[in-house]
Structures are given as structure tokens and as C-alpha cells.
Length: 141
Image (tube, rainbow, N blue to C red; front, top):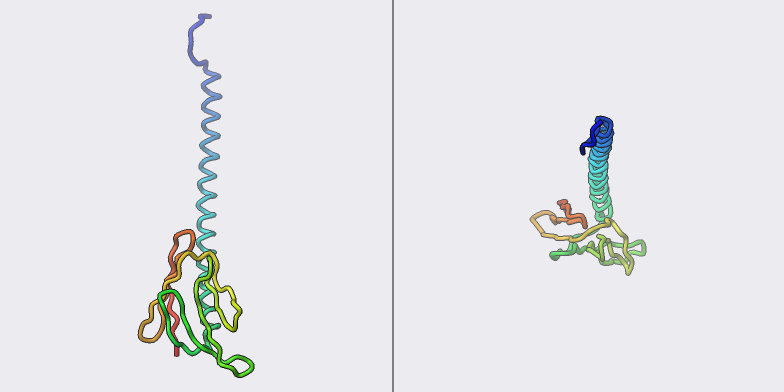
């Protein structure tokens, strides 16, 4: 046998086997990451729809007063018969409903909350901390 440098057939087969295994693992990892992205996207959509339903329910009895670029203002009669102010605004990374010196979180993970009054409601755009944007409208009566 001669002493020449190079790979033997066995070394080449081992290298190809390792490369094949790595590529199979990488392929499976990419497929799993895609499924996780779809699941997270579906969760964001579900969270958004729940927020819209909750916002509509919370503001059902509220009489609209005004809106600024970052909040919605109204008034409502409380259990004691007093008229109290209600505000929907961004507080830290949440959208909250403020009423009678208390607040209720409605949506979390919010980076920006922009409101604009139109003829029969308030359009709002929510930008989440991951950069995704969602739009909604509250139609007041």
C-alpha cells in the first residue's frame, strides 16, 4: 500500500453520513419553526378578536365624549347612579380601561395605540411589540 494523502472510501462514507444527518435535522427544525410561527400568528389573531369583543362589551353602556390621538373618552352611570368618566388608553405596554380610579387591562404587548374619530365611531390602530399592526373600529351609538 502506498502512503498517499487523501480520504479513504470509509472516511468519505462517514462524512457523507454525518452531512446527511445534519441536513435531515436542519430540515425538521425548519418545518417545526414554521409550525410554531403559524401557531403564534393564530394566537395573536385570537387574542385580537377577544380584545375587540371585550372592548365592545365594556363600552356597550358608555356614552362617547371625545377621543385624542391616543385615548378614547366617555362617561357611564355606575351602580350608585353617579356619572363617572371612562377612558381607554395605552398604559405601559397595555391597553387599559380606566374608570373610578381603577383600571382593567384589555390587551397586553402593545407598543403603540393610535385613535382617530370618524363620523360614527373611533378607528384605532394597535402596534404590538413584535411590530405587527391590527386595526379596529368602535362604533358608538
